Length: 262
Image (tube, rainbow, N blue to C red; front, side, top):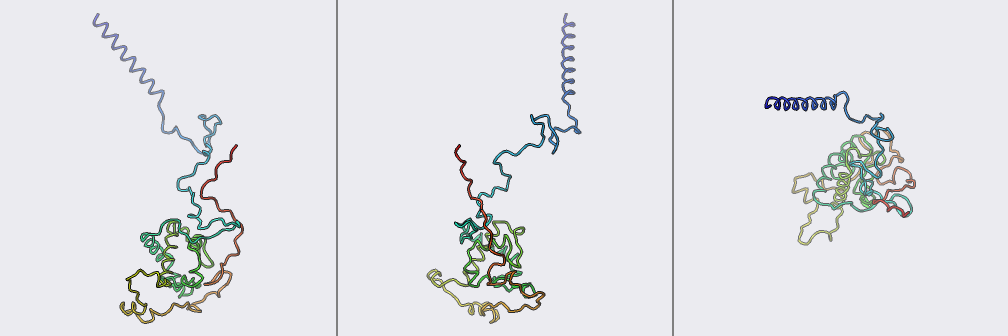
């Protein structure tokens, strides 16, 4: 009796093992038949038999949520429907922001505008079209977002730098340009009490710099090499924008409009 019981147990175990093997073999998934969706192919998983699924309504890809349009464009929509620049930074200006702006300015802007922003960069002295003097009356009067807009779209002979500078870096450079302007045009009433103000001639003497260092900046009438004559349509320093008046545009709102009531 005991032997018969053991045989029945063994047969049951073998049957269970064989059934398990059949089950595993039936669920085998070969590598050449991967369970994935292939673009532009059908699928039996969905009722419409389309493997490519439509995007979920109101979804935004990662890194493409440009909710603050002013941060990404530097303009807002004015009351007349035209673009309008603002003398406003989209985030607080700190020393970290200014240092980043200085570093980016020295890399990308100094070849034309020079490190002090007077338009006497090295390639200008070697024949490139004159760059804007960021310290003249016209540049100082422009709102800070104007510099962001120019870096984004270009201006006259200046190409755009949107590929080289991220939106954050463009704003940092704009803030540093304003700091450069203030460094040469700050009124005495802005100086904190107890701070000694030195003349540029005194600083030059202390640093053993040549006397010409303290002279006013002047843009030369003609560069060393002038391959092409100046074209007013391309823009030159202290002139109006090179492009014609911008057509009426619509700037996307910074926040989505509320859904209309049904």
